[in-house]
Length: 133
Image 1: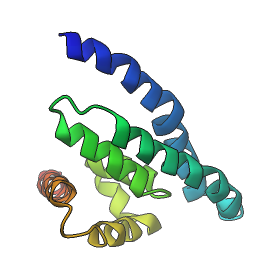
Image 2: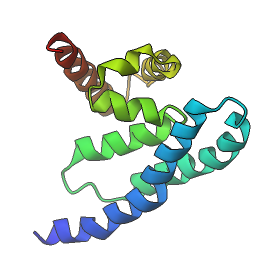
Image 3: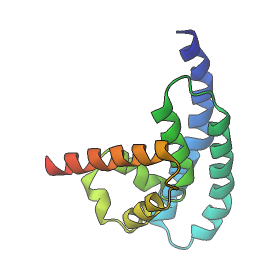
Image 4: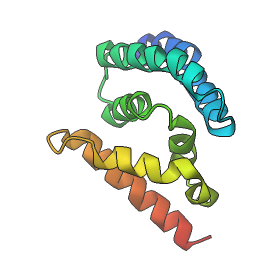
């Protein structure tokens, strides 16, 4: 109970300063082609600071949550696709960034077993959900 109270303000900071802005920037990046460079100039520092913030956060035994946050920062500007991929939205596969998200997944180092295992779980969940749609 005490550790969860400690994680509450830390998670609030994560959502307000990193998750929300990165998701919004990624959505705009997907929908407009002429704003990609300015959005990248704004989004890359946010993703980098978010990655550092998550690295410094205590995990308190919730490794999947930490890995998902790190992966969210590392997949910028395809956060919008990652969000829909984790929600098993079957229509996300018809967007342009979906294949690029998978190429980012392929470039995760083999030594990073936690992230590799998380990606395998994501892919399995997505494929199972697609079978039942």
